[in-house]
Image 1: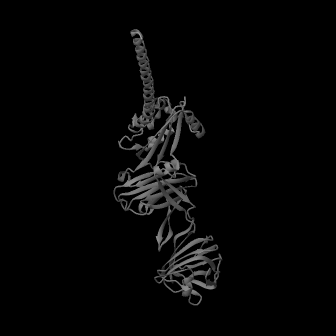
Image 2 (image 1 turned 180 degrees about the horizontal axis):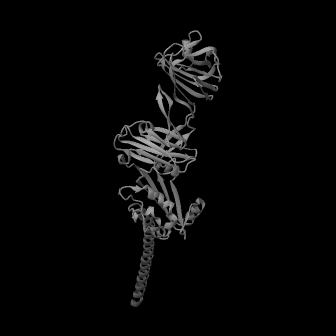
Image 3 (image 1 turned 90 degrees about the horizontal axis):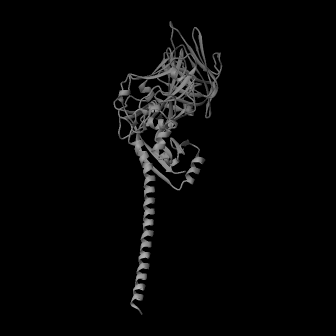
Length: 492
């Protein structure tokens, strides 16, 4: 074998090895470059979503009050101007309300990509099921002080012109507090002496009529009030000078399930009577966290931005996502501040007029004043909450005849009992004591809310609601939680 021939084979083998090494290196380099490119693309995609949330949630925007004049906004931001750790609820609402005016800003934030926002916020929700009771008599006092003074003969009967022996009426429920003891339904039958039960000073009688009855008071002129079936009648015996105010069973009976009697009274008495429907609304207040709404997939609102156009159609959004080779989700939890005091806001089951913690105990003379500047008949419903106590106020009438009914519930002997109070207006104004509307003046460190739940027959500008004296200075802001979810993709 020749020397030159051996060198040629060695050189050839070396060249092959070099070529193979160079090929492997180049292939590896391409793979590394591809991996780096993919990593940069992934980082860029993730960075878009995170940067968008950073810009929106770490700054109040410019100008800071952009939500009040969206046409002049330079940069949107959701951070509250006075609380650097909280978002501003008004800006959260404005973002959705005015998004069409923010197209260019959103396109720059998303770097031309497509995205969808979902906002989940915690909130209270109130409801009123059923109607407030109609009131036929409220704390109406009938009195006759005997010989030489005005006398009154008081009768409750099915007859609108009863004689000496009034027609009895049936009741579906009866409660009697007599001589310090309580008797319910057929328990009163043991009290009958002859054909009657005499009632005395300090007694209290409450029953539900099973048929229409008349409440009559015969004086110089007769007063007559028709009370519909299934109404409640309450009687307080204040003074009884002579015997004779009685439940008369002479033409009725006292059998279980069919108690019938009439009410009669002589001229020498003082009694106070109320009558109202045996129908009360069910008042509820429910608080749900942002996590509750997230689990139910019920955001406060959602919107998508696809090819520089805002879209709300779920089918279009889903199809756009499916066309994209990638989707990057990001979500964060925040706290936000709701408006604390806005007594001119419109009716809502969710957005209260007042919402906050009360720092101090309100004064005993504090009142809530409702003014109506309208001759038209209308009504409104206010829902109040102090701590866990819920109450409802129904205001109805017009400027010259304004009335209100306050309803709440208390637990008595383990039973949930409806309570009622009535207010009469003067020149279109009703003052309701704070203690009665909210249930207490012990407000320190308690949450306080007031909703204008509904408004009918009047415009909002015709109704004024105010606290006297003003309680704004006593309220501290209430912070709630929110979840913001953002999905970014590329449908190009």
